[in-house]
Length: 90
Image 1 (spheres, rainbow, N blue to C red):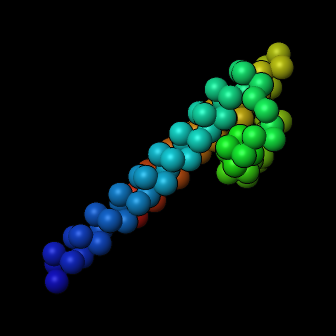
Image 2: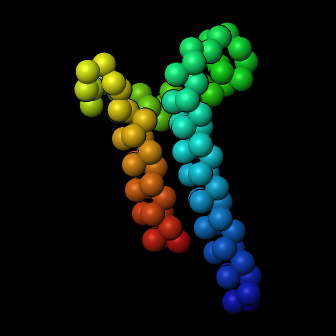
């Protein structure tokens, strides 16, 4: 029984880590894409924006320095905080 609980614990921790990593990666990809002005109608670009908009929207407008939007930095910090908080309770 303890083996099953240990395995379940490991699976949940790995799932949380993987989801957080994918979200962080998508935000970084979006930042890099913004430097190149990609075609907003390209299906891959649209999907990246669809997945990251809900993560970035709460932070947009909070930190602006000379036209530089730092909402991705805040989102990455929030994801890291949420990951560590969730892993602490698992």
